[in-house]
Image (tube, rainbow, N blue to C red; front, top):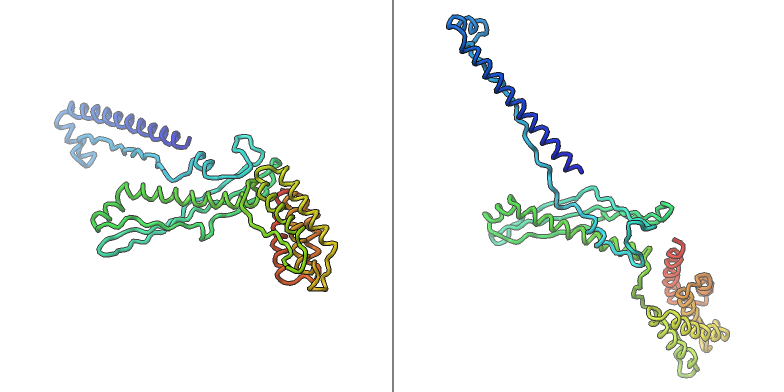
Length: 336
C-alpha cells in the first residue's frame, strides 16, 4: 500500500510540473509577442525602467525529481516466516487460538575487507534481532523471548578476487544480491533457534531422550524380577511413540515390580538386597515412568523420598534432580 501511495504521489508531482512548465512557456511566448510588437523607442524605455534590455525572461520552473520507491529484498515474507517457524503439535491457520508475533526492528551489519595473497574479500557479520511473543486464546502472553544475543549472529565471507574485480563486486548489484542472501541465511538460522526454543517450551512433538532403567546387580542376590521389569520398561519406552496403550501396559507392569521390590528396602545395610543404591534406582525408575504416564504428583512424591533422605548419596541425588527437571518441564507444559 505504501509503495502504491508513493507512486501516486510522484505521478501527481510530475503532472503538476508539466502543467507549470507549459504555463511558463505560454507566458513567455505571450510576453515575447508583446515585446516584439513594441516600437524601438518603447523597447528602450522599458529596458531603462527595468534595468536590463527589456526583453522578457522565461519563468524558471523547478523540475520535480521523481524518486523511485526503494525496493528492499531483505524483508521476510509471511510465507517465509510460516515455513521457517516449526511448532510441533500445532497447525498453522489464520484462525489459530494461539498466535505467534515477531518483531524485527532492522538488521545489524558490520563489514571488514581483508586481503590474502593479493586478493580481497569482504567479511560480513549479520545480526537479526527478533523478538518473539506467543499469546493464548485469551490474549495472555504465555511465552516470549528475544533472539538478539551474540550467539544468533552470523558471519559470512565473499569469494576472494583481485582488486579490480573486488571493487566492481562491492559497487555493483552483485554485492547487494550476495548480502540479501546472507541476510536470508541469518534469518533462517534465527527461525531454527526460535523453533527449537518454542518446541522446548511449548511443543508437543516427540523428542529423543535417554534415561537409564536401573536394576540391582549382584551375583549373590536375586534380581530376576527387576531384570524382567527392566526389559518391560525398556520396550514400553520404545513403544510410547508407536502404541501408547501398549506402552502403558508394559510400563505399568514394570512399575508394579519396582514398588513391590521397595517393600524390602534396607537403607542402612549396604549388603542388603535392596540397599540404598538399589532403592534409589527403583524410586527414580518409578518416578520417570509416572512422569511419562502423566501422574506428576506421584512422580513428585517418589523423588521427594530420594531427595529428602540422607541415606541416598551424591550420585543418586544428582540423578533424581535431573529427573525432577524433566518433571518440572512436563508440569509447565501441561499447565500452559
